[in-house]
Length: 283
Image (tube, rainbow, N blue to C red):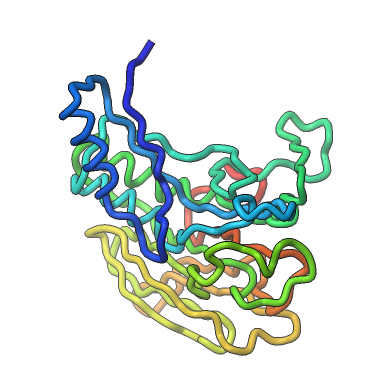
């Protein structure tokens, strides 16, 4: 039996990334009160749920745009060092912070088949999170080993919501989502490259926005949604370019559309480059 001290605040209460203030205060209070045992820190990539049941606490979104990258970097960089990290979570579909592969939507005999309830399938199905494991693996190896891992592949993890926050949705609690103004309407990209590279991102009319990345560590950037998403929406395009050549390319599998059938503040995550596969069978 492990006696531990767990602080479960993994999501900010405002429209900004979390600092380690709550962790520092909690750990200091434990010390002052003579509590022993390892300190467990909670880290999570996202938070959104909409059970459409009229209960305010069941329809909300936390500011999560760059939460995972920022919080993991804070830990890896020793700005705050817990004894144990608990990643929330592997399979909590209700609150949109799952990291496992998406389960089969049609094969009811599959070992990972999931029956959704309360309409949550409307904001989970098709919303892949698996590539976030690339980010988690990098930072957690850094934290465990005390130094940043060598970068041996070219990868860009990018994520986005599939509707602007002001989209008129026909289902779900679209007018009652707590904190719905917090998220930024943008595609976010986290680059990890083995040599100097230019990352290019196009989102509709916002074409060829670029940022630089190199082997010294991750680079983070964003491209806003265009004002006009068109009648059928637009899908982001990401490329890794080196020596005037495209070395990796990816086009998002989910479009960003101006209207929707169900309120959805979940994130869809993709990978440009080598590593975790994009689909439900990601390894």
